[in-house]
Image 1 (cartoon, helix red, strand yellow):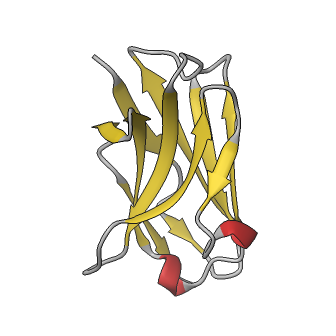
Image 2 (tube, one colour):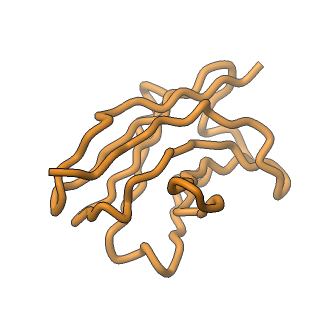
Length: 118
């Protein structure tokens, strides 16, 4: 059974960089055909896909967030990370990591609330 767990600070100040880690267990992030995503949900709003890192390390980002987003990985720890720069209160959301296999998000973390506030 694959398990994903988000971790990171729950409070970030405006203009700073939000950094989250997704730790994966029960499967390797380098296994062929799996894609590892970051998705967020602001309070009272729908899910927003932020970006993805593939099993081979390639990345792709939402056009609306591309200038502020970076996704990387540490294969030795089986983790992938999200960095979102220059945050504002509008970046307050529950942040999820999720695995995509054959265009289906089949495993999700429980999510972590990040609040942007001074």
